Image (cartoon, rainbow, N blue to C red; front, side, top):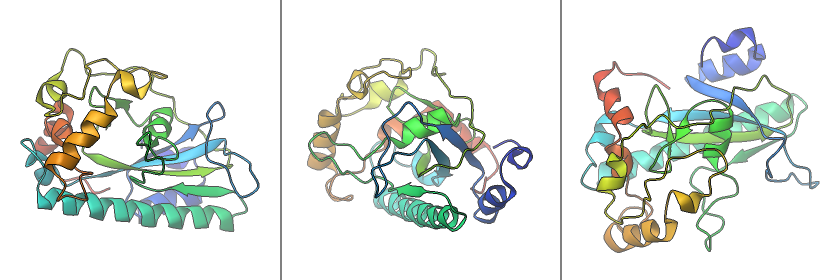
Length: 240
């Protein structure tokens, strides 16, 4: 986030600083079907942020997940859920509506998805784009991140949505996917997930080969080989 203190409410900027969240923004979701509150109302905005994964661990799973990755995945997801709950509570104290979106919560087991795509809020907030591996890619951390989202009705200065991908001709993730679940298509807003990822092929492979890691919910090979992620190893450690 570049100097958000000049446009965001001071309390929100300070909250992010205290919790060491460096990549965040607000998304305009008026045109999207967001989850509803207890009265049936939807949320016009969302606060989106990214928490980086340990880069050494991410680099270690280029040939398949390991226990260190499974532990890091769970740790970062737990932190996101704690932050989401705390931020949602803070927003309500200030007289606004809010609803946290759980990290990696598969609420629709038939279609293998959650209540709302974290990636949609993130791209709308200008945090990054969706790569050929169907994951968000950010400039600071590549796709070596987990995402947090809190829906709200606070009218915030929203980021400029990212509406194109910056993967160029790179297909590294597609080439290494052991499930052959990636189509190689380049993302753009509104492109159906199935045009990028065969989610059932991905899910089946993980359950058949990596069940020991969160009951087959972990793989990460496609993300591990992403050049934008590998660049992180050359940078100084970044706290987020």
